[in-house]
Image 1 (spheres, rainbow, N blue to C red):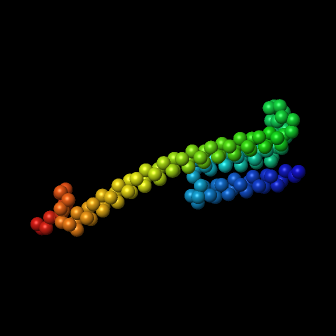
Image 2: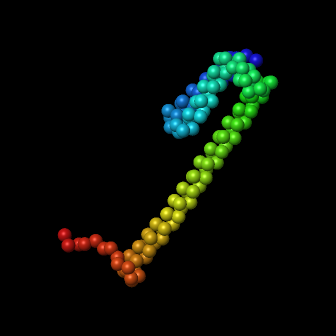
Image 3: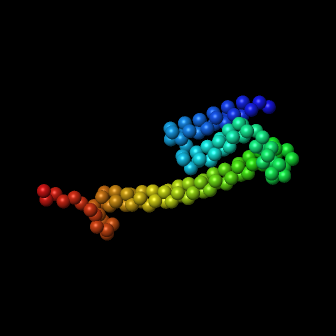
Length: 131
């Protein structure tokens, strides 16, 4: 297989990630992962013998199997990270919904109090007209 195609794809991936980062469509903490992956892919595209060397070092006979295993580990890590971020966002959304419900109830109480003239027993706030 030609080295040119994977190298061009890797360079395009790094350029796309940098463009998304610059335009604010990708946060820095996610961009770092994709830039590392793109850089490693560029290095493997320029030096294809590194994959064979690394596979021999680990004891894997077929170098492509090492690439697949690393890709699977990477995808598992990305999936775990996304699940963690989703859990955090769900918790924050629940907390915000609870706070909005409390504030909405307080606004309803205040508006009801203003309509009835403060009959509910709590002091109502009225502006001073002593100017």
